[in-house]
Amino acid sequence: MALVIAPLEGSVANVTGFSQLILGLAIVLGVGAIVYASSIFLLWRLAGCPDGLEFDVANLLASYSRRVRKVSADLTV
Image 1 (cartoon, rainbow, N blue to C red):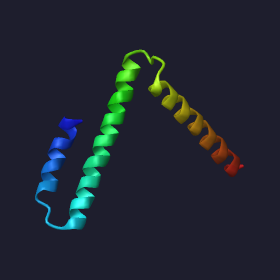
Image 2: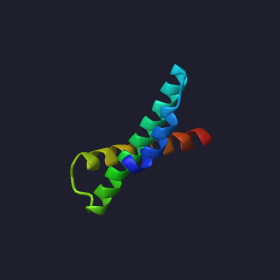
Image 3: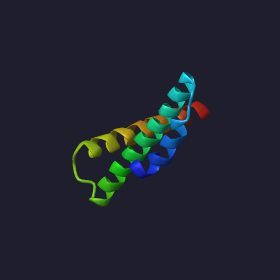
């Protein structure tokens, strides 16, 4: 995560306006969160998907995805 957000931090360092600073920090935070979550799930998959919090989150996302697809299919009929 540090390798990904390090170049983004330089763009926030030269900001003068408060709103620009907040926007820049939100971008750095968002990118960092996405990279962190993605790396956690990638490492979990590489470890063979052991039971734990990641397993529960993956099941939750899969059930949500199935529910959204079912609702969107019902709407198109």
